[in-house]
Image 1 (cartoon, helix red, strand yellow):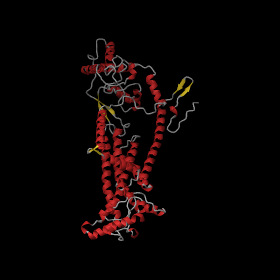
Image 2 (tube, rainbow, N blue to C red):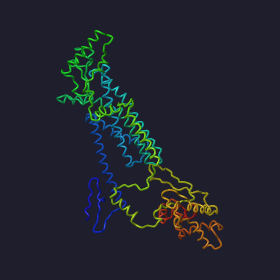
Image 3 (tube, rainbow, N blue to C red):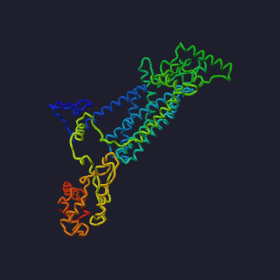
Image 4 (cartoon, helix red, strand yellow):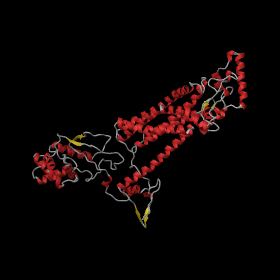
Amino acid sequence: RFNMKSRYLYSAYRNKITEGDLEFKWFSLPLGNIEMGDIVSEDLTLAMFSLLFVFCWMCYHLESVSLGVMGMTQIVLSLPVSFFIYRQIYVIPYFTELHSLTIFIVLGIGADDVFVFVDGWRQAEGIVQAKGIYPGNPLYLEKRMKIAYSRAKQAVFDTSFTTMVAFFATAISPIMPVSTFGILAATAILVNYLMVITLTPAAVAVYHVYIRNICKRSSSENVEPSGMHEVVTSSPAVGVGTESKGAPPHLASSVVMGGNSKDVVHSKNASSLGQFSAAGASSRISSPAKKLTRKATLAFVISEEQEKPTTAIEAFFHKRYIPAMKWKCRGIFVLPLVMLVVFLVYGVTSMVYATKLSSPLEEEQWFPTNHMFTTIQEDLNNKYMVGSLEEYVKIGMPFGISGIDRPGFNKYKPDDNRGHPVFDAAFDLYLEESQQAFARACSLISTKQCDRNGCERDTLVWPTNEALLCFLPDFQAWFATRNPGYSTVNCTRDTFYSELKAALFEGVSTDLHIAAIHCPCEEEADRIYRRRLEVCCDSIHHDYARRCCHR
């Protein structure tokens, strides 16, 4: 009739439905649950987009689809392993939508760890060659991996450990969903770290030895990914015409530096390098004390292609940020000093505002502001007149309960085995001091001061006779009417409890809820509970509870 249709990320209940001057709105709890499920399902598709974006960025930064696939696979595999530890080793069955957010934490940290290791692998290339070990040498791959691993493992450990400890700290939270989320997230970070220091080096080695060579053979130009290729070089200090250890003969008199195929020195630069090598050889002959070692020559002869930034971000830091940080005015580094002051002011301001944080004053809004389920709640709160007492929360205070017996209760299954109240055997409402204590409690509550935002009249209880319901004064008046010359204090115990039971069923007080039988007859107890009997009476008259169980 109203042609209500939903589309992607837009619910049909966000439309305004009118017919003439009449506006229609739909709401029910089952309908709300269905709508919430639909919203969560649509939001999960956005999560897939985030996974795709991270994967594409990994392929771009690593300059290899193969390494991107291996890195993403390692990140995704850490989740089921973490969940297995969470459920089987920690024995925590609790899992909600909050815990599914762990994938985003692992996604960011895992991708960053892979970047750190691959960057270390690239940097290790020049370090190994500076030591005179070149591609083709049996020790080249081992030495390069050792240097990359030793550098990356510490950086990856530091970032993973600090983040893991931060999430593990939430395990002490008394809010069970938050504590279990922290435990799962910390476990996922730990598993991801273990995979980064084991699977990622293996994946890089496999790519370097096998996959990259396949790609090179399939390319007519033999173009290699920047930063991931082997650098073949010879030392000019050895002299023109000599071959370096591990270098192919046809490149013995040239220098290949940098990260691209353009770094191969062609004839245009070969003469200058040859002159440099000849000069090096001449210097070695004429002045042995000033000879250039292979390491020094390799550190000195660096092509312009290698120094050139390969990305826009690197170009910004090389050409703009670093010069600005090094700029001085009268011997003072201006930009670092300004940044230090700005961040110090920001930190102090943030700390001041952090001290003013408080719990939310309004209910959490789960749907958009123009959603029917949201506007209906606003209409019920603002457009309908209600009694003043209906705006407040009703609180009940039981007496005579010493604790709760919860055998087999698992805090990670809060809906199961809720337990049973343990009644105080010493509690006896018949005693005069017990009745006085009950009356005194009612008086204290009625005059209790409250300076919170929710207490409009500066008192905990709304200052009217209807706001505080204490059944004892009503029961005492009713008892005196039925038993002339007696009160609840000077009568016998049997009379007191028999009259209390009679008052219960006659509805003497609107707050006289003293039953909900504590016995194995669950169906009978439920029946009585539906008659608004809320507190077990078996501490008041045991014979009535027994009759209920055998009825």
